[in-house]
Amino acid sequence: MNLLNSNKGSLGKGIVVATAFLFAFGFLSILGWTFTNAFVGEFGNTTYSTPETEAVGAQFLWGIGLFDWVIVIAMVMFILGIGIANWKIASPPAFFIVQFVLGIFYGALSYFFNYMFQEIAGNTVFDGARVFFPNTLLICTNLHWIGLAMLVVGTLTLFGKGQADKGQFVE
Image (cartoon, rainbow, N blue to C red; front, side):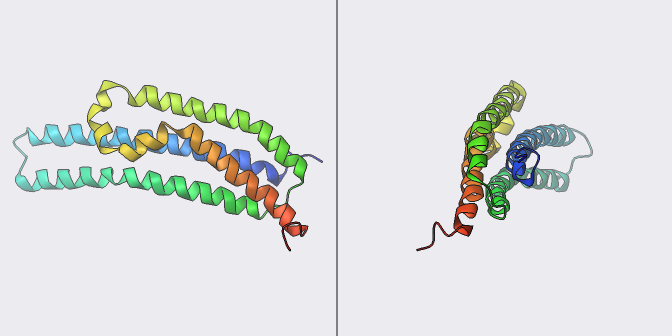
């Protein structure tokens, strides 16, 4: 029985992909807001600036600020998606133990992304952007806990479905 190369190994891949996506999306949102804010500010200092262009720039920055809530939705969808995807796979109890041991690796990788985000977003260049992205900062500085939540939801649904199919949870 090859547990790691089966479709049961998709839980670990899902955790790694979700963590990497949340890291990249959070960083790119903050970076995009920083660049756009600098561009709008510099454009406001030119002779081409009008009240209409300043209003459009402010609305564009507000639109980028909505990415702070998009990352919350993405995080919830990843956790639910991992749970639903693993509910469809029956798994032997041995895989639960294997996944539990591999959770150490997933936790270390999530903590690595967490640490990278703290180091990058802690730069003084992003001081203005951090005010507008509180949810992103909360999520991306706690990626190790989000990875743990994904692991718990994924392993419980993965193992629980196998036990429910055997009738162990039915009275």
